[in-house]
Image (cartoon, rainbow, N blue to C red; front, side):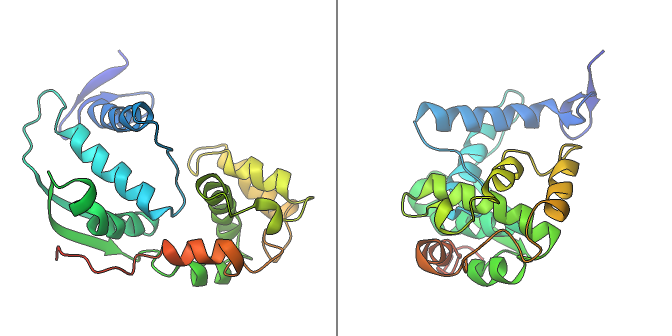
Length: 212
C-alpha cells in the first residue's frame, strides 16, 4: 500500500514521506500559476515568492475535507523568512481576500547584496548563488549570466541550478563546488554591482508590513 493515514496531513505517501494533502496543495498552487501564464521561480525573487505563498493559501482553502477561514499567519526561516516578509508586504494588493494576522521571519535573507557577497566562497554560497543567478536571469532581462559568471564556470553553475536543493543528487552539486568551481565563488564580478545588485536590493524586504 503506497499510502497510509497521517494524523496531521491526511493520507501519507509512504515512498516519499509527504502528506498527500500537502502535496496536492502545492500542485494546485503551481497549476494556478501556470494557467495564469506566470513564471514559477525561486531563489529570493520576492514578488514571485509572495504570490506563490498566497496562491498556496488559496489552494488550501479549496482542499476537500478542510474548512479554513481567511485568517493567515505566515512564518519562514532563511529564504522562507524572505518569502514570509514579502508575503506580508504584498498580501493586501495581491490577495485582499486573505487577512494576514501575523508575520514571523527567523534569520530571514533580508539584505541580499550583503548576503551573497559575503558567502561566495563557501559550499552553500556557491550552490545558492547558482540558483540565484539563474532565477534572476529568468526573471529580469537586464541580468545576464555571462556578465557575472565566466564561460568555463557557467556549465557547472547551470548544472547545480538544475537540481533541487534536497535529495541525493545534491551530492553532485557539493562535489562540483569543491572540485570544479573557483574557490572564491562563482562570480567573476561583484554580485552587488550592476543590474544584479540593483535587483538584489529591490528584492530585499525593506517595506513596512501592516501585520504584526
